[in-house]
Image (tube, rainbow, N blue to C red; front, side, top):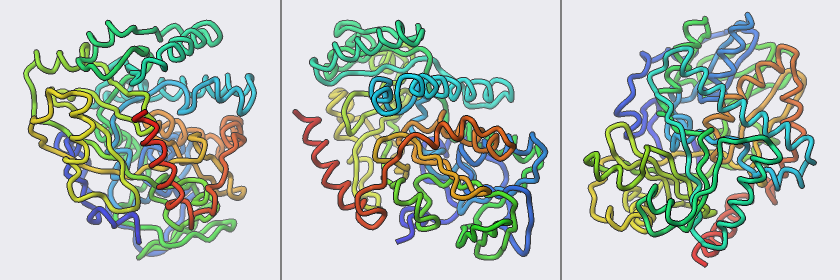
Length: 433
């Protein structure tokens, strides 16, 4: 089954609230014939777009390929939450790689958020950035640990933008009985991800990047120079950046064994009154909870609830995405159980075994960055910049990320899906305990 077409029509954005409220660039042509460039970037999501922009700034001739459209995949479908740090908390990172490297990874995480902020502001991208993410604990036993972690960040990492929230304040900020406390991180925030992707695409085109859409990569010859083939073109490139994340398919087996595609789903309700919206989430913060099968939600600019939740196993999206998402949304907000849902869509992201991104230099001139595990708005954007810098000879950050161990899924790409089904069922049961 081809994950690029199993749930989507070629070149057509999903029927999402994002697609309905974003004006994209005119379609780019498909790649045809024999082409040559300094760098060929495969995948026009945040990683690929960012890499292309930075490489063009450095004077490289860049070709950017996408099987569908720019921002078509997870980059244009996600919850829009821009989180600080890494997907893995610092306590776990310190055990994984040591305190010194964990501190470097924390700093990279902060840099990723600042990069998103800077790109939006400097280039006047029409996607906005709203400060504040609430991390909400769905069990009372988790609150002390969450509060302790906030203190650790403040005391050991000098990060003073996070603070603890008790149950009373949580009920005030998030109009739901489901949460017992948590933290508020004002360093993170949320944005319109598809408009951000379109802003990056516009920037890349202005800098001379040759963008080709509807150009599915069918083969990669790992040599010097490398050859990238599509249905109708062959591109000869000095360097290749694989920025495919959950849509890699079978293009590169070593990466596929470590980065697995999974599906996630979002629903957008009908617009609400200002008072009703404020009663659900005050101050327009974003919210993500402590469940392993995470719920994440925020308000749109036209006061819809954008709620991400539910899970499915296998490549196919469920037929009733709205019904799937309504279930967890109604558990968090019983007052929304009968609200009209105007949009519901799915997307495919890439996860790793340890939830850290997977950076790999497959050979001297072929780099891959993916596996952001739901923490990709900021880290994928920085990932593209880091890959571009590595090609230009500044490889310290790429090597730092590449040295973080990302284990193979047991059984590699062949067995990862059935094993994940068992694991996710177990974690789903654990969330209910």
